[in-house]
Amino acid sequence: MAPDIIRPWNRRAFVAGSAALLCAPTLARAVDGAGSVEIERDVTESVRRNISSFRSLHWEPYFSTLKNGAILVDIDSRAVHFWSEDRSTYKLYPSSVPQSEDLTRRGRTAVVRKVEGPSWRPTPSMLKRNPEWPAYIEPGPSNPLGTHALYLSWTYYRIHGTHDTRKIGRRSSNGCIGLYNEHIAELFGMTKVGTQVLLI
Image 1 (cartoon, rainbow, N blue to C red):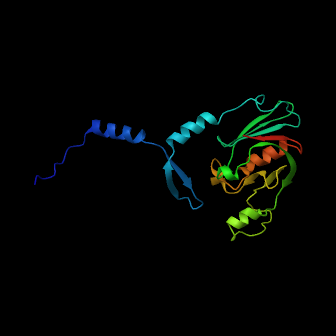
Image 2 (tube, one colour):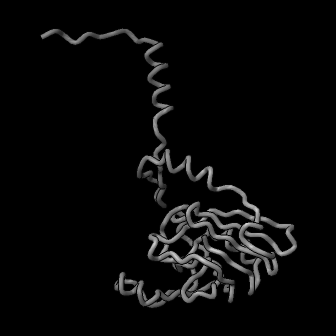
Image 3 (cartoon, rainbow, N blue to C red):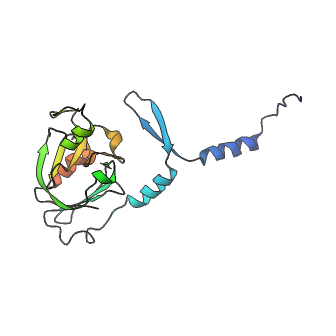
């Protein structure tokens, strides 16, 4: 058996190896509250796809008018767009979307109620899937609706904040559209009862 050969340090091999590491696929990382990092999965392809789809849009293909302002929820790109009635303001926010297609609703609706500091009750179907959940959560840091909620004309559907920021940009909700609390607070201030909403 031949002895191990110890080779001298080779600058060319080091540079080539470093370049290979830099070109390796990007890995998604989630930082939890304790500061630890969890490697989840290779997201190189999804990052490329989402970068191209998370872009500003014009309102005209989606709405015939901007009366009362307009919100477009693009479920595939996980983005919420807002245009003000006077066309002076356009906003684009990353969002969470429903976990699966059977929990997803698409179509036209409107904001019918606005609540700062919302309370939360799980729907009957949520309690059936998760019988261990509480029947009611009061406003505060443990509330799944975050700091603000825009209630839609469809029963149980809302655009709301979340205290769990890991959910944003993911398929993570039971049907609602979630935003960072600072973003829902801003959107809440710009919308009114009657703001039109389209989910595509």
